[in-house]
Image (cartoon, rainbow over all chains, first blue to last red; front, side, top):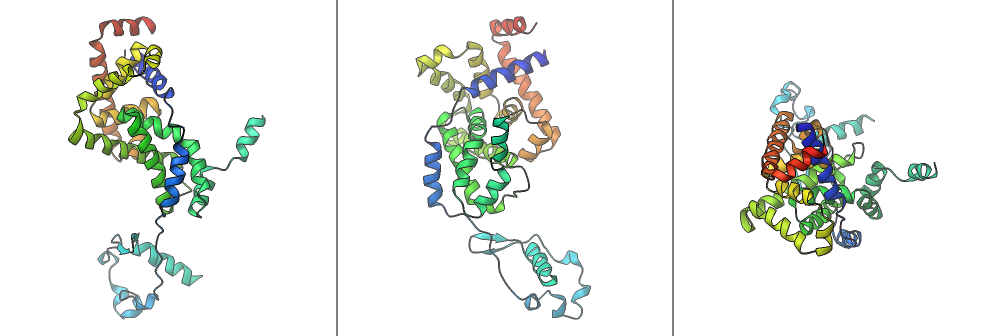
Amino acid sequence: MDKKLDAFLERTLKNWLSQQQPPADGRKRLMQQAERVRPRRLARIFVPEEALPFHPSASPLSAQWPQRDFNWTAAFWFGNDVVDPGKFWSESLQLRAS
Amino acid sequence: MRAGFEAALEPSDKELVLSLQAGKLDSLGVLYDRHRNLVYRTALGITADPEAAADLLQDVFLRLHRFVDRVDPDRPLEPWLYRMVANLSYTWVKRRQRWFRPLEDIAEWLAGSRRESPMQQLEVDEDNRHVQQAVASLPLSQRVVVVLYYVNELPLQEIAEILNVPVGTVKSRLHYGRQALKDSLDEKQNFLAELQYEFT
């Protein structure tokens, strides 16, 4: 019975919804609204890594600080956008290495 | 053959997302045309309200535009759209439930909306109407799963990822949703008789 019911529900729901169409002027309305909305861009902050207090060069002992002491998931706000400092830091190091 | 060749020339979702990230707004229109039915029908299945579904359709694509920098072009776009429309529809129904209209009324409203259009009413199968009412009266969490499973044919694992719940929870909601639908439809003796006749 479950299989029969499954097959019937699938067919009936699809029948019902396939007859429904989104509004004809939807695209026009969307484009008008989208033109007024500014996409949120991810911010990029350029700070020399040596200037960061937790950079190894900032303290002779800092290289021994356990990684777990840093909360890399913490984000800080710049304007309206969230920047992941962990990601920023790794990108910055890659850039420097290249 | 020709249609296949032309399809191959159409930009992929990835190309369109990259183009939108570069600020080309036309790509949003192409993505809208490509996925609007999927988004609209999912929203309609969950909300049972054509006006709300139309608004949610707009909202989903405006959010795609606004937060396109956070969309990973290397991953398929459809799960992102499903997640967005499911979450927005969920929020819409919860708000409506709380502030405007008890959930039970949605089924009545759905039946009423059919009466508003005589031509449509003639076309709609009576069995369809029973099932729509039964789906609309399901608890919201079960309804979302039922729509994603039956209408969008998504596997349980994908539904779990979209709703950010364990697969076991999806299975449970589907089981109880199916059972509730069956109980609801059991009340319609003639309907079930027809169902058994049709599938035996």
